[in-house]
Image 1 (spheres, rainbow, N blue to C red):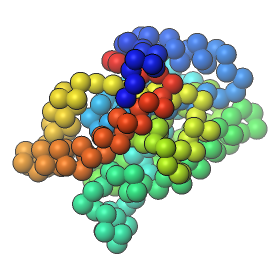
Image 2 (image 1 turned 135 degrees about the vertical axis):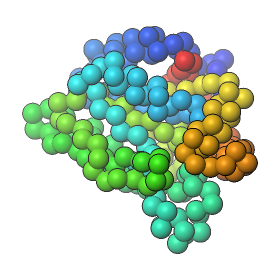
Image 3 (image 1 turned 90 degrees about the horizontal axis):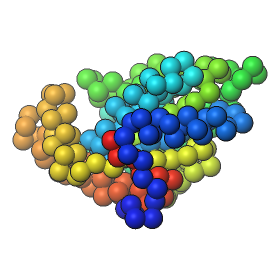
Image 4 (image 1 turned 180 degrees about the vertical axis):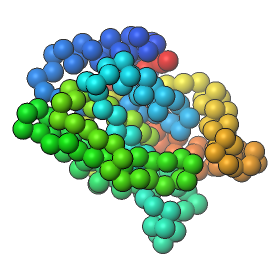
Amino acid sequence: MSDDVLPTIDGLDAFAAEIELRLAHASGRLMVGIAGSPGSGKSTAAALLAERFGGEAALVPMDGFHLANEQLAALGRRDRKGAPDTFDADGYVALLERCRRSYGAEGRTVYAPRFVREIEESHGSAIAVPPSARLVITEGNYLLLDRAPWSELGEVLDVRYHLAVDQDVRRERLIARHIAFGKSPEDARAWSLGPDEANAVLIEVAAARADAIVRL
């Protein structure tokens, strides 16, 4: 990651101010992406940011596009759920493209899936993106990945940020989250330092493609 050549935004207030400025100059719907490694706080940051903008904003997490466990098992990928090829990436890109087009009086509501961590599956059409929403925020691991179809997000999103956090803090936070959702401490650590860490390496390298680094 090249923090030395990328602009850095410090704190949620500064992040919100950055989005507000972009929104003020946007001619249509503003599409914002927040990337980051597992446990970096993407979901929390995106939710807080969306809350700042109230009814003007809609939040569409990438996690809703996890392939179902049944499909992962059939593909032999269940043991590395969360890797780039364990998502319906084409569907994710296509839905964000629909969101980009469906704004204003002639637009239609777009429905997106929501990932339910308690059951490790997604619920379809759980999130509504009304045509009145001026801002669409999406967050996920692979928004900056330079491989198709993830790379197509560079044309769909107006701006992409990478959320940076101390790596030791991120790992411990991730382990605690896995434990909270049912893994044993041993399994939580093994998954966090195994599949999750392998994914984090990809994500941190891709961070160089962000428009700015965000530190909260």
